[in-house]
Image 1 (cartoon, one colour):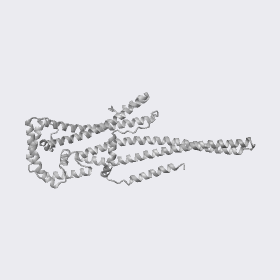
Image 2 (cartoon, rainbow, N blue to C red):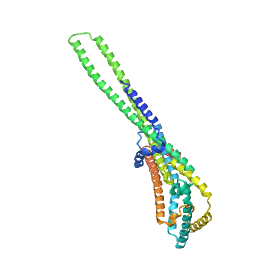
Image 3 (tube, one colour):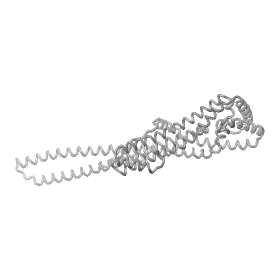
Amino acid sequence: MLFDWLFKRKRKKRDYEEELEQDDRTPAEARKEESAEVDEILSKKVSFEKENVDLKNAPERLSYLGRLRDTILEGKKQCDDVKFEYGRVTSYLKDIQLIDNCDEDYRQIITEAATNIVELNEQRNQIKKKKFRISESQRVALDRFEEETPKDIEKLLEAEDYQVKIRNDLRRLSGEKHLLEDEKADIAKRQSTLKSISKALVIVLLIVGIGLGVLVGVYRVDITVPFIATAAFVFLIAAIILAEARRNRMDMAITERKQNKAVALTNQVKIRYVNNVRTMDYLCAKYKVRGATELDFVFSQYKEAKREWARQREGTIQLEENHEILLNALAKIAVRDREIWLSQAKALIDPSEMVEVRHELNVKRQKLREQLDYNTSVMTECLNEMEKIQSKKPEYARDVERILAETKGLR
């Protein structure tokens, strides 16, 4: 009976592992089914679970500070990557303002050149649409990011595969935490049972002692043998109770250490989970696709179409002339990313298209800003935690400074 809890825990682990082995969903199906989990984690933004760390224990304290430092470094790396992409999107929005506010003479040149480009492109697109399964928005995106697309396909494939692994890690860690909670409850229950047994034993001893006293005082009976037997029995039971109580305390300490480790790992995995989801969402929005499989297919269609377009040169010279006119006009009004407008000339003559382009850029920038804010919040939480520890004791302050000094540019 004392070992029922052990076999119960093994059965739970075995059932959980069998459940994971049966999870044979594709990355696309897994992403669709986990949308509720994504929304829950994203809505919480920074959802650190407080670790129960014994700061008086130097190794535990230093390990905890190291984990906080590593989390800050990961957030800083994410921020640096996001800021670069954010700068590109912002530069594009500034170019739109320059185009909207340019002189009428330049505006007329830009409009005429853009109109010619749109008409020539429409003639070419009639052939493209008949032969290739690719939308206009996808074509525009691939025109702009053709050189980056192979890397982005690989990046999106890795992110989708990694997402499945992260989700399984979260499920496994959640299951482990539940198991540890059950184990702590079992230990507490056993400890409570020992206390009850101890109290019952004391009561029994009192009754036996009274009985032996009556036998000696009233009936003058020799109680040497019963007394020795009783003492031996009490000693044996007390030894068992003390041994079990000591084992329970040791099991509780080990379980709490495992629980702290599970909490720390859960925090790390959640951060990776959120950043991975945001990376996939951004890449899908960038190319107007729903996943890596679709992006790979669309890109293959795009490359095939480009080979076909290369064989059809009617109107190419005129198109290039208008390209040159448009680029020169944009250069004179100080537009930086001029080549982008060659594939989005329609926005230069259609205000609704320009509004759509501006909205799309603002959505992208908002996604990037949210990711930047999230990682900044994570870094702030970790730094605040380190500052709290630093303020408690001079010894802790020296450890914090040493941890921070190991990484240049952390603050």
